[in-house]
Length: 112
Image (cartoon, rainbow, N blue to C red; front, top):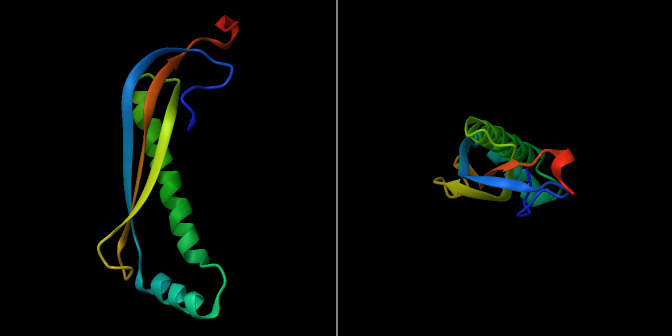
């Protein structure tokens, strides 16, 4: 997995196509209440940070499955987007979309 258009030290031999994964995570009333308290008193909203981290991991896990289904060795040019769905900041859903290009790589010994 790389945000760059290549994998350092490896040659791309074939582009297999664009792969994408979408994950929607629900926010709940308790996380929102604690987030509002953090807004007032300051500090990190750890519950919200955990939702972001968990959703990002789930999206990358799904992207890996999509790439493997195509026979890819790697995914390059990865883009990660977060979007709130409905709720206007209250009890909404967090949508994570990750896209990239699935590629085949030359064997490490084949690269000069």
